[in-house]
View 1 (tube, one colour):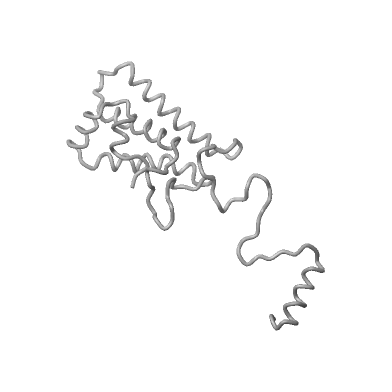
View 2 (cartoon, rainbow, N blue to C red):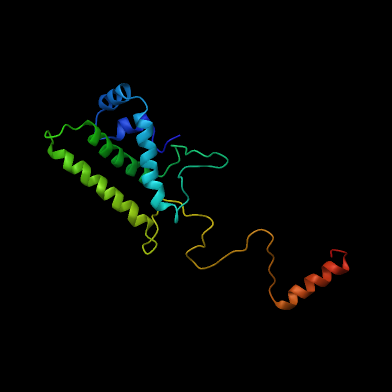
Length: 167
């Protein structure tokens, strides 16, 4: 499953529903290829900081479009519109809105780069990686970790386990 479905793109794009339908009819598989490309453009810079791919609930390996963050969907819309414009435009017949769409795509790529930047605050909508330490500096023990309040507590626990046949 993609980050955005074909129906969502038809509704959220600056291009009309019929233009997307024409592209999908004339060149089948183009939308799926573009969506995978856009997903890579979004995921690759964010991989070190966030839990990507977004919207994946284990044991599934593909994203569920209903739980993908809205920011990621907006980024996907902007990048897909730029790909659509590049495919459909006729050289020499540029319109004033073409530059707006390309500048929006450039701004989107910059927003993705800013979200990936470790020196800037994390994007509020995106889930951070679970294997990274939290921002608070508190590191919690994983499985098979036990802690004791004092060094003597450790020895008391050893003696208790020994006396009860634990060791």
